[in-house]
Image 1 (cartoon, rainbow, N blue to C red):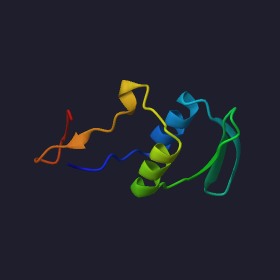
Image 2 (image 1 turned 45 degrees about the horizontal axis):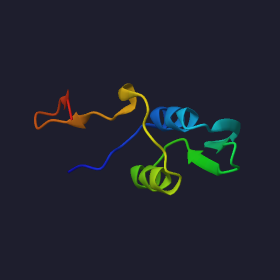
Image 3 (image 1 turned 120 degrees about the horizontal axis):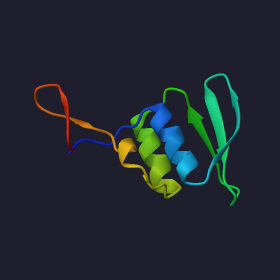
Length: 81
């Protein structure tokens, strides 16, 4: 089974859907904060392992079906998971 991988844009959308607001951005980093006071810093080129760790640590949920990453099929074309 392949690890889930999001683009930076998809991960940022996921944060916003989970109640996080963009506080500021500087260079290649984006700072998000939610009402509970949790702060998440996202790098422009987010590593998939870092993304998975943040999803688990902050209990982030994918709410939009279009954000579910497509898995590659054996022929190199994106297909349904």
